[in-house]
Image 1: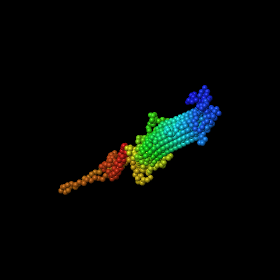
Image 2: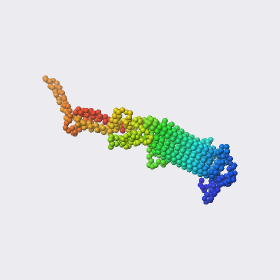
Image 3: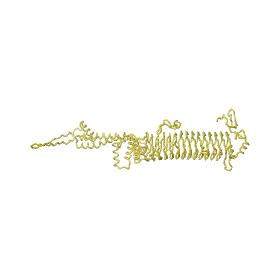
Amino acid sequence: MSTAEPPPWPHCAHGADPAADPVGCRGIHVPGHTVCLAHLADDDRDSYLAVLTPGAGIDHRGTHFTESLLNALLNTLRDPEAGHPRIGHARFEMATFEGAALFESAIFEDCALFESAIFEGDALFESVTFKGDHALFDQATFKGGANFTLAIFKNRAGFSQATFEDSALFGEATFEVGSARFGSATFGEATFESRAEFGLTTFEGIALFDSATFKGDAGFLMAIFKDIARFGSATFQGDAVFIDVTFKGKTWFNSATFKGDACFESATFVAADQLGPLACAGRVVLSGATFGGPVTLSLAARRLECRRTRWSSTAEIRLRYATVDFAHAVFEYPLTIAAEPDPFVLTNGRQLAEDPFPIPRDPRVRVASLRGVDAAHLVLSDLDLSGCLFAGTVHLDQLRLEGACTFDIAPPAVWWRWPPMPFTERRVLAEEHHWRASQPGAVRGWNVAVLGAGRAGPLQMAPVYRALRKAFEDGKHEPGAADFYYGEMEMRRHADDIPRSERGLLTAYWALSGYGLRASRALAWLGAAMLLTIVLLMAFGLAKDTPKQTAIGTVPTGGGKVTFEIDKDDPQNPTGNRFTGKRFEKALNVTLNSVVFRSSGQDLTTAGTYIEMTSRLTEPVLLGLAVLAMRNRVKR
C-alpha cells in the first residue's frame, strides 16, 4: 500500500500533513476513541488496558508499537497461572514494532494476523503457540532477527513475500495440519537475506517455498516433511543443508537454483518420484541418502556425490556438467546414469536456466568413482570415464555401456629415451595411469593420482580389465574389448604373482605382436625376419652352383635290362661375391615360400636347409599374428 493511500479501516491520522504525509498515522481507532493505541492519552490507554483479560481479542492494525507499549499490552493479556500471554483473535496488519517484539511463549487462541507488519528490532516468537486457523505474516518485514524456535502452528502458517533481513530461526518449530486437514506452511517468494534455520522443524502439511530466495545459508538439518515439499524456482545463494531430512511426500525442486552446495546427505526420500530439474553451481551431496521409490534425478551441477546412497527401486539420473562420485552406492534395481546433451526442459516447455555456469560451458559428465558398487543393474550412457576408479566394483562384467562412453588413453610412444616406450593408443583405466605415474622412471603423460584415489596395482587391475573386456564383448564392441584385453595382459605381465617363465612368455608375446593386437608390430618383425633370412641365405644358404646329376648304368653281358643309378653332387658352399642380383632373387623366392609354409625347391647348403626350416617355423607365425591383430581391430 502506498504512503498516499489510506488504509481500509478508520485510522488515527495523527501527524497528517497535506504536503508531506496526507494520511498520517495508520493505526486503527481504539474502541470508543478516535485515535490509535499509540496516540491515546495515558489515562485512556490505562483504562483500555485495564479491561483486557487473558484470551481477549485485539485489533491494532497499522499501530506503531514501542517496545514498552507492546510489553504493556502483553502484560495485560498474561495468564496469571501459566505466566505467559494468552491472546484471542489478534490483528496486527501493517503494524510497526519499534525495538524488540517480545512474544515468547504467547498463546494465540484464534487467528494471528501480522500481514505487512514491520519488525524494526528482533521479533521473538520463541515457543509461541498459534491455535487459530491462520497465522499470517505475509509481506511482513523482519529487520532484526526473527526467532520462531519451538513455535507451534496448529493450522495454516503464511510467510509469503515476507522479508527477513537478519537471521530467521524456525528450529524445532512444528507446522501442524489441524482438524480441517488443510494446514500448510507457505514461504512462497519470501526473502531470507541472512541465515535461515529450519533444523528439526516438522512440516505435517504442505510446505511451500516456491520462488523463495535464500541469500545466506539455509539449514534444514533433520527436518521432517510429512506431505508435499515444494521448492520450485527457489534460489539458494549460500549453501543449502538438508542433512538427515525426511521427505515423506512428493518433493519438488523444479527450476531451483543453488549457487553454493546443496547437501542432502543421509536424507530420506520416501515417495519422491523426481528431484529437479535444478541447477547447482557447487556440489549436490546425496551421500548416505535413501530413495524409497522409482525416481528421476535431473541435475545440472558441478559435482554429484552419491557415496553409500541407497535406491530401493528403479532410478534414472540425468546430468549436465557434473563429476559423479558413486562409490559404494547400493541399488537393487536398474539404475541409469546418463549425460543430457541439451538443457533440461521444464513442465512449462521452457529450458532450465543455467546462469550459475560460466560461458563457454562444457556439459560433459564425468564419473569419478564406482568403487564398491554392484554393477549388475547399472547402465552408463554418454559418460566420460577417463578418471573413473573401477577397482573394487562388483559384477563389472555385467555393466552396460550405452552411447559414447569414453575412457582415458595411453600417452604417445617415447622413442628418444632408452629403453624406448612403444606405447600405442588404447583405452586405459585411471588406476593404470596412477600406477604407471608412480613407477621409477615414469614417462610424461601418465596422470598422477589425486588425493584419496587410493592405490591399485597390476594384481588388482587385471580382473577389472578382464570384466570390462567381457562387458564390451557382450555389447558387441570388439575393438573396445581388444583394448581391455591388452590392458589385462599388461597387468598380468607386470603382476608380482606370476612365475618368471610365464612373464618371459608374456613379454615375448607383447614384443612380437602386442598380445596379438598390434598388426604393425607383427608385420615389422615379419619384415625383419624375412630380411634376415634373405641375407643369411645369400651369405650361407644358397649353393655356389646348381649340382649336376650323373647317371651311371651297367649293360649285362649278352644283353638284358640296363639299370641306371642317378646321383647328384652335394651343394657347394658359396665363394666369391655372394650378394648378387641372381642370388637375391633365389633367396627371396625361398623366403616368400617359407612365409606361406611351402618348400621352394631350391638347392641349399646344409646351413641353408636349417635357415629355411627356421624361417618356415617363425615367419608363418608372425604372419598369423598380424592377421589376427587386424581381425581383432576391425571385428564387430
